[in-house]
Image 1: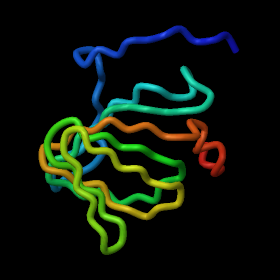
Image 2: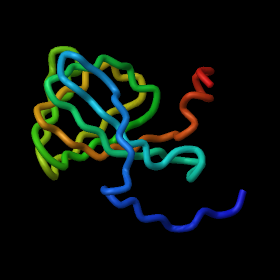
Image 3: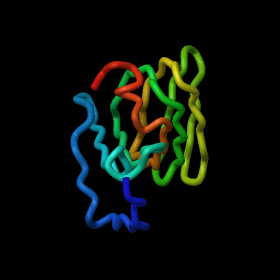
Length: 119
């Protein structure tokens, strides 16, 4: 595989797809995937008035960009505003929530679907 070139992702060019809701709404723009990287994935997501349940199958890092993002892990609630960072280890059962929240996320490994036989 040829070494990929450095790439700029302009917000105005990002394609956001619906990710969850109702109630509320979540969207996601997947930016870095297996087509660009052999090790990591990344993107931007929004959460507004929704609660999405998931068990992460990868290590994940979330950085608050705007609004209030909430991550529920069991009885714990982690709230992140702009500039706050949350790290989530693989295997964590959680709920993604937010009020007008926009976040950046990064995950490893990018091939998590293959690793867990979901591809």
